[in-house]
Length: 118
Length: 113
Figure 1: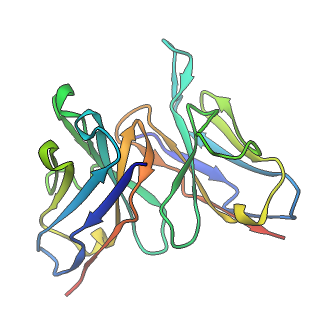
Figure 2 (figure 1 turned 180 degrees about the horizontal axis):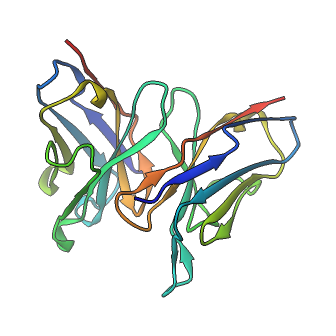
């Protein structure tokens, strides 16, 4: 059974940084593309970005609101994907979900809450 | 960006009755080379992460009850729950994965009448 466990969320001031981690198990992680999706409190889903599997170059794509501020990376030796978030804004407040990505997201973590507030 | 618009925003259906949710994309999500639509449906229950129901517009994910079905092509899609059960109360989202950035509909809340 595939399991994705996010960590690293918390309270951060505007302009600050945070790194989220997502530990994966139950899958051949190096063969999986991964994505991040977020959900602001009481709102809908917003795609953040994705990273291809390393054998496909590990390339990334991002949504416009986070491009240039957020970076997705992976460490296949640790079965972990990361979301580095810099220059955080209040509108980045959300639950951040890590997903296994096949174009669609076929497996989701429980999410980690990021609150950007002074 | 492809804009996804769902209708209605919410609906209340009696137990055992049919629920129908529509999703319209601002441009076609059909891959002409494969004749497949890059459209997926998710179900999100309160306090839980979303769950994949349908991908390629009409392929049911393993383990999803057959009362859930997806249809449509091009720009117009439908998720049908043939006989609503109490456990189907949730918000349902469509998403296109035809082009970046991937985009979601605003969600449709399904409740029991």
